[in-house]
Image 1: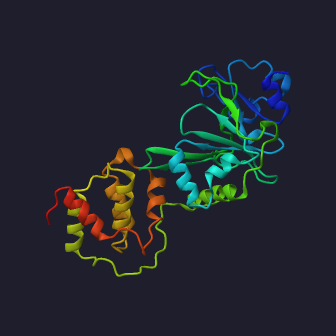
Image 2: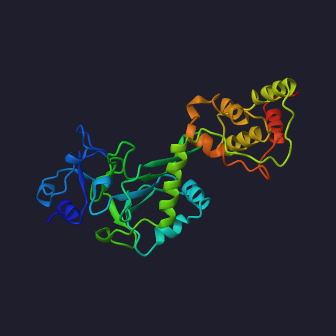
Image 3: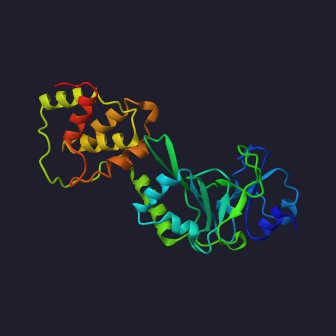
Length: 295
């Protein structure tokens, strides 16, 4: 029995992928009737192979795909999850691409949990992919991840299995990670493009035409095409003004660098504002002066 046949014998639904590619090119490949689940049919697959997460049996599979190790660790840590613990778990199953600072953990979804809509987490105005929680699409179809021993199109080397576990006995996704995924989906369905309710600790800056003109002038001297740290601090500083449309003003400033803007990333940052310790108007003044403002 070849490896593709063995995959299907263990409940994996497969997608044929052309050699030298990371994704299928045949129309409708992500439809249930297009995937391969029969070991005899799988034996005829040539080229690369992908796992169709949503259609695996008896339960869908999923992947935690890490694109930026540093940012992913920070994002998960903020939600009470230690990425290193996941990677070092005794039953951890990884797909190893050989690319630096990347990782991919594969899990089973629990019994009774349907295929999950995939979620992409981006930072730095949406220009950096941090991680993805991968399984299905919002319209009920599947996504796929390339399986060993497929050849990576960039490195020319085969993908390999890694981790202390065994792909023949995939671990169930940790409860904490599943909860974070579910919460992220709820937040997006509710429409993250809504300001979080705030209980202001201080009055903020008077909302007058004169103050608005002053702030607008300062913002003209601070480029939104900046580091993630400056972008975050500026968004929080604008929100700290306490104006009813603070998030809208912050978004307008971010959109002065439209090629860097990502809606989900913006609201992720804006709703992370903490009125007890986040930057204030002083941050805006400091960076405006550094940019040549002398008001």
